[in-house]
Amino acid sequence: MNRKHVLGARYHAYSIWLFTRSDIKDIILPSLLYSLVTLPSLPPVFSITTPPLSLFQRLPLALFWTWINLVPITIDNQRQPDSIAEDAINKPWRTLPSRRMTPRDATTLMIFLYPLALLSSLFTGGFLQSLSLIVLSFWYNNLRGAQDNLMTRQVLNAAGFNCFATGALTVLVGRASPLTTGPFLTWQLMLIAVVATTVQTQDMYDQEGDAERGRHTVPLDLGDGFARWTVAVAVVFWSVLCPCFVGGHVLGFFLTGCLGFVVALRCLLLRSVAADKRSYIVWNVWLVSVYSLPLLAAVSEGSI
Picture 1 (cartoon, rainbow, N blue to C red):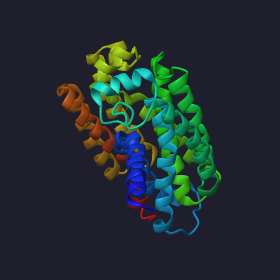
Picture 2 (cartoon, rainbow, N blue to C red; picture 1 turned 60 degrees about the vertical axis):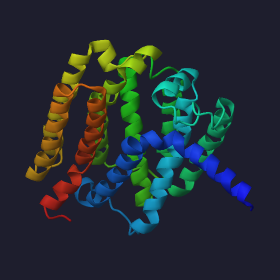
Picture 3 (tube, helix red, strand yellow; picture 1 turned 180 degrees about the horizontal axis):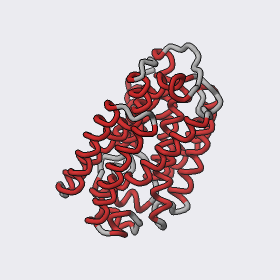
Picture 4 (cartoon, rainbow, N blue to C red; picture 1 turned 30 degrees about the horizontal axis):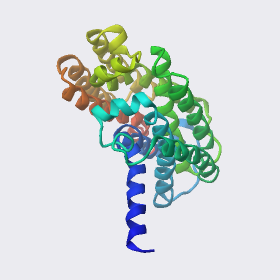
């Protein structure tokens, strides 16, 4: 392979990576951290027996699963004409507004990657989550699930977060079938509710762009001030209820409570676009602290 081919391959690989660059902090890292902190708690907290495994072998597979399922979803979202126009202003470095790839080529790549993600999931695990993500993405991006209804947008976001998180966990455990004990499923429903009632944190800093695209978001439909209170109240509420669900240990209350208090105060007091972007990062850290509650409960009880 000559230098020209190497440079061409690097160019196209980087173009594909740019589709997912913005989602490292809110999809890839939280999903992997969820799988890592939940894995040790499966036997003592959720009564799920886990087979012997090597994290060095399974963690790269979990990372691959998360990314290969994320790429076609982000392409589907970013290839829309209004998305390209918005990104040309807010994120001109992205693949399509920077003209590293045409929308037609991006669509072709997306059509190729969706089956590849499903096929890969047959071997790595997480097939059900992969299939669910395709359905959720089609609804969100092509049936105007992100545009026309506020509640639909919130629930689709929450379900997507959960599919990525549990999919990465399934791959890490090495099972082809889903994890289905009662306590575990109840915990997943609670986590979906956590995200559905607080994920509007990501909408606070992009109200101008959402308004231009006609999206229905919490701050646009209910007002900026009220939206901030919905985040603050919900985060504090879940920071108390979630530790109670997994055993009510002091360490869990302290961790989620402190981070939740920071998220609430930031949303209420710091209202610039730059501050809202940082608040969204803090919200992601708080969400990971909620993910870690079963592990903290198991450690506090001496089960690990």
